[in-house]
Amino acid sequence: MGTSGKAEIQKARRWQPSGLRRSGGRDVYAAEAKGDRRSILPANGSQRRMIGSDHQQQQRLTLAMKTMLVPLALIATLSACQPRKPDSPEELKAVVVAYFDCISKKDFARMKSLTTSDFVIYENGKAINTDGLIDIINKSPIVKATYSFDGFTINVDNASGNMRYSNHGEFMKDDASLITRDWLESATFKKVGDEWKLDFIHSTVKK
Image (cartoon, rainbow, N blue to C red):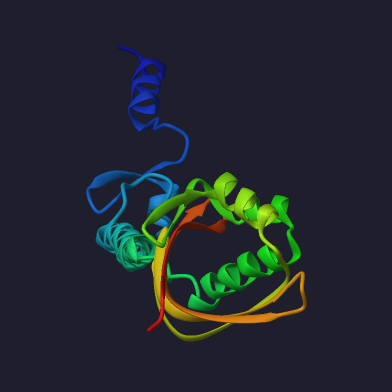
């Protein structure tokens, strides 16, 4: 082989890829030789720890969010399960007062609106419904009536209620004579929609 042939072989043996250099007995790229390993080496230990740390922080954040949601869900559940506060006994008292005021004024339409459809009164051994009571009032010689109440004992929940009380009545007849009566009465109520209505009255003359 001639001199030019040997030179070509030696030249080919010395050829290296662009950027590749010999360093410490091994082939390295120029970037590695300069200490810049980021573009050619996998993540080192510090980088792996950083990635692991980020993952742990994300897990802790997720756990914290779940921990916060549990008490909120519990509070919402307990609030929904709490019983509704009963209505005021004064609401039932107002219905009774209004009912007897309608009797005094012979406001029968309003009187019916304050009672349930199956309302009944027990008085003097008789059961009297609303229509029967209206008939009695229309045939009565009483021209003026006033009622006053005392001694209320009232129980009420969210759908029903009951009470007992004393009823004092003063009546003027068509001959201008006056009559007074006292009764011991009890009443029951039902809630129809958002309104309290009289369901039953039991009345007995006080002795």
